[in-house]
Each structure stands twice: as structure tokens, then as C-alpha cells.
Length: 248
Length: 260
Image (cartoon, rainbow over all chains, first blue to last red; front, side):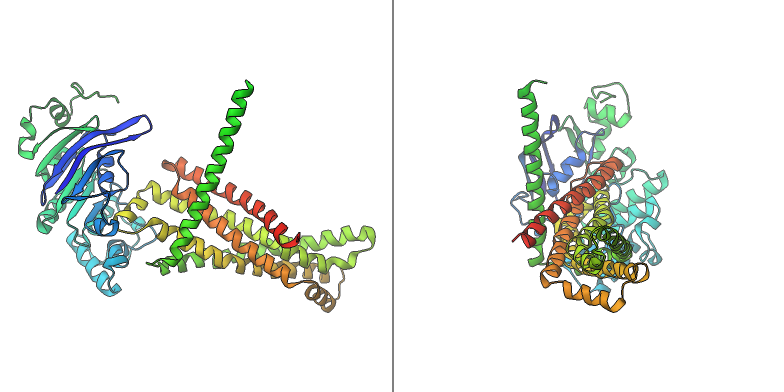
């Protein structure tokens, strides 16, 4: 279980998180929605320790994220970045097997390559992609490679940062289905941030609405259309009128 | 302008400069401290050796051969004013080994390697590859910075040695072909005149310049701003800082080696 308690983070005068409190139950898929610049990515990065919160606490299965052993803590996570964040200088299979080629999870190169090929197959990519470089792949293929890398070490918790941004609707649907299948198959806890309502409905068990640095609403995806929350209603219907200012 | 305001600005500028130098020093110490702590990234170290050392050889060779040749011509024409044309081999040797070899190689490394490291790491930062490294349980300093700084520390002295030899060869070629020196006498004068202290100072300067060049590239890359402008600014600042610090370090090291 992931628990954020009253987490605050500011960048200069820009108060991004103003006391965010959120619980993600183990084995469930939580999607955080909210406008651009509302702190969704910052929230994920705070959990991973990429950004240090100004105040508040973050616990993963009761363990304080701040005091946990970093290597052991991070080895529980996988993350799909918005732009893929694949390493340009490494081939596709070396990207996927990155964690398996070094550090505490290191194993022989042949074995790591075999696992990488299996993960690539799992995300619908053929073995001939393995020896190409990321720059030789399309955006959709890069997302799939990023997804394969996120699941390569079979993490307990997977974060997805805008998984369908920049993809055509068909490829977005493919990625959404893959994420759902993989999360269910692995029994992983998932946290996704997105603006894409199709993704929300495809991926989420529960949804949280982040606005002005705090969670305005949280509930099961089945209640999203009847939340009664004006922020959620405006966001999911894409209305310019409402409590969320259209121009920020 | 109000004198108090002017003083305040001057004070702020001095404090900022000292703060930056302090952060850079800590950054270099931290990166080199990882040399002694596993895990070790040998592949990245090997690639850095190849990129900084082997691939810099052409530019080092071309730069130093012309510098050595020009130095021979200048020394000959300058020496002719007081009938000292014969000192060309000695001046070329001492000039290349003590000063021009290390400085020219250092500046070429700043132009070629510092800029490339800064641009590469800054791009990695902008595209979240640095964050990805962290989520993959990999320390970015250990993975990206330490191999480059260590490789530069080891390989730039070798480049300086090659540059010294090629520079002297450039002077030799000009001396023998254009200025009428006897080849055997030129070489004998060169070898006889150089002292071990000259060579040690040359290699020590190479090591210091290598660390400065790689550290500046990594420091500005890791601290770059967002977007293409951030990458461009990081690259420009890294080369400026490396060039200035190499010349300042050259002055200090020359004083340490030769004013005793």
C-alpha cells in the first residue's frame, strides 16, 4: 500500500503540492487525473525520491520512503516515463535489461537478453527490434520498450506517467490494454497519471482528482461519472466553464 | 548607482562565484570518491576512455604539430635579432613540453570533450533519462560522471605526451626543412635540454586539465535547465568554465613546478 500524508512541495513561489493525502491499496490500479501543472508528476517523483517533499510523509507498505534503504526501496518500483526516457546509447534489449545487467539484480548477459526478449514479446514487439537503437523506433514502439523495461524486473509497484500522450488513438488503446493486462497478470500496484479519459476508464480501479495541490475527490472508476464533485465533472466532460479556471 | 547597492551586487557576485566553485569542487570529490566504491561500470569507463582518448588523437595531433611548427618559426625569427637562431630546438622542446603541449591539449579537450559531455548529460536530464537511471536503482553520478572523470584523469596525460612529441616533431620538420638545421643535432639538442621535471609537470598538468574538462562537462550537464535552451546554455557554460579553469590551473601549476 502507498500512503501519502499531507505532502507539500513548492518550487520558489509556485506551491505545487499543498498537503496531498492519498492512499493506493496494494494490488490496485489508481489513476490520478488533473490539469497540466497541477503536480501529478511531482507527486510520483516525490514517492520515488526523485524530488524531496518540503513536508509530509510517504509510506510504502508502512515503510517510510525517506528512511528506507534506497536500493531495496527502488528495486520494488518500475516506471514508464512520458517520453519513454530510453537510453540513446544502448540497444533496445540493453535498455529493457538495464536492471538485470548491473547492480543487485545482475545476471549473465545471455539470461538478461532472454528475459528482455520475453518482455518485448509481452508488449507485442518482435525479436528483430532487440538490437536496434531507440532513435530507430517510432513513438509507439518506444512506449512499448519503456513498458517492457518497467516490467523487466517484475516490480511490485509500477508508475505510468502519461502513457498515451503523443500516440494515435489505436496505439493508445493498445498501450492501455497492455497496461491493464500486465498489471492484472503481475498483481502489481499501479499508479498512472493521465489527461486521457479513455485511458482512465481502461486502466483504473480507482481514480483521484488532483487540483490546486490537493486531492479533490477519490473513488472507484465506476463512480467517476456520478461523483457529484464539480471539479471532476468539469474535467471529465472537458468543459471550459466550472471551478477549474481554463487559463492558468 | 548608490554605492551601497553597488557593493551589495559585488558582494553577491563574489558569494555566488565562491558558492559555484565550492559546489564544483564537492561534485568532483564526490565523483572521484565513487572510484573506490562498487559497483563499477567498466563498459562506461571503456567507452569514456575511447571517446576522450582515442577519438581526440586527430585533433590533438593536428593542433600540436602546427603549434610546434609555428613556435620554431617564431623562435628562429625572434632569435635572429640577437644572433640566437641556434636555440630553436631547445625553445621548441621546453615550450611544447612545459606550456603549449598541455595547454593546447587541455583547450582542445575542453572544446571537444567538455562540450560533448555537457550536451549529452543535459539532454539526458531534459528527456528524463537521469530520473530513469534513479528508478532503475542506478546512481547517476556513479554511472555517468565517475567513468568520464576517471577516464579523463588517466587518458589526458597520455594525450599531452603524444601532443608534446608531435609538437616537437612539427618544430623538427620546420627546423630541418625550412631553417636548415642538421637533423641529428636538432634531436640531440632537444633530448639533452629536457629535464625530467619538464616531463612530469607536463603530465601532471594533463591530469589536472583532464579532471577539470570532464568535471565541468558533467557538472553543467547535470545542472542544466529545461529544454533546448537549457542544453545550449549548459554546453556553452561548461566550455567557458573549463577553458578559464584550465588556464588558471596552468598558471598555478607552473608556479608550483617552476618557481621553487
